[in-house]
Image: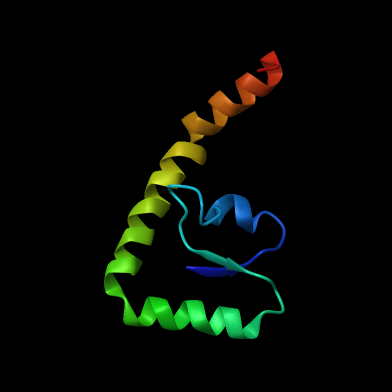
Length: 79
């Protein structure tokens, strides 16, 4: 996935230094950077597979109903 670094998108995709990032983030006006990342993904099927697997792991860690309930409970408890 290649996405722009706006709104809540970075939370969903993750930063490249996170072990379960699901893609690449570029500035909204970085046309060359966007094209470079898309080209990389077009030419590297292994990279696409890895990002897909990491994206699913990220979803399970952060965005399932159970994960969101745990995060909300921790926030309410102040932890």
